Each structure stands twice: as C-alpha cells, then as structure tokens.
Length: 205
Image 1: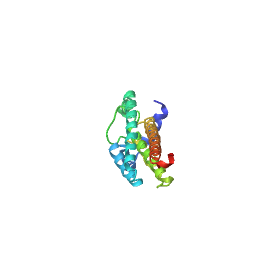
Image 2: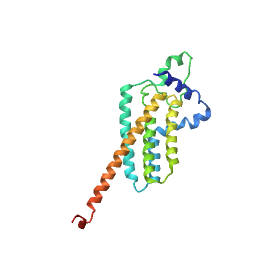
Image 3: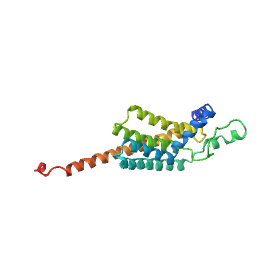
C-alpha cells in the first residue's frame, strides 16, 4: 500500500469527523447499496423518459451486472485487507483509531463495491439524460456529485482506502460507458433495419 493511500485515508476518516458529518456523509454510503441505488434509479429513469423506460431498465441491469461481475472477480482475486485489518496492531496499542460507522469489515477491500454501484448507476442516468434533452448540463453534474458522496463516505465510514474507491469508481464508469455504447449501437441497427423493412415497395422498383 502506498503511503499516500494511508495519508489520504486519515485525512478523510479523521479530518472530516464530526457529529454532523456522521449524519449526512455517513449515511450517504447507503446510496451505493444496490437495494437503494437501483430503485432510486428506476424512479429517475421513469421521470426522464417514460417512453423508453423499459429499454433503459434493461440497460441499467446490463451495466450493473457487468460492473458487479468484474468487481467481484477482482475483489476475490486480490482479497485485500480493510483498514481495520491493516491498522489492527496500531489500534490495539492505542497508537491510532479508525472512525467506523455501521458494520465492521476486515477483508475484500479492493475495489469498493459501493463506489462501483453508485457510478454504474450515475453513468447510465447521465447517458439517458443526454439522449432525452430534458435536463440541462447541471443535471449531469448533480448526478455525478451525488454519486461522488459514496466513495468519500466509504472512506469516512472506515470501510475502504482511497485506492479502493478510485478502482470501484473506474469499474462502474467503464462498465456503464461500454454498456451504453453497445446499447446505442444496437438501437441504431434496429432502427435502420426497421426503416428498410418499412420502406414503400415502389421505392425498390
């Protein structure tokens, strides 16, 4: 582990510690939970574009699945220790402490699943937003800003190192961008095929 990784961890985990941050920044971690992130995403998708709602649900499911599979393969292959494990001896000796909110976790730190989920969802929502033209550019900024709370929160809660959340964020973004690109290609081919089949018969004479 790089010294910078540890230093940034303590800057966020210790430096931001307060009762107020426990409430809003601590509980922001739940936005990276699939049982919360995906239902919220469905509401946003339905609001943005009801006509294409089900096709966008399919896209979200594909992006989330690809990102989740990739993340878990890496997570179980690396089997990296969590901060509570890395600093166990220092904690026992009283040389340091870790601000821990919610469940105490010890292994499978790299990459962060919550970060991957948050940015997989955010990337799909931004892609749908751009195609619908219903929101201005600030809409994309707001979506990514909310998603960014999750990786910061995971460090604040003592569950991950900065490198973990960066990797999780990258996996979420890449998996969703690739899924959106493939989905767009598929839709374009389907529309072109429908246009050819619906062409009046006299045009082919």
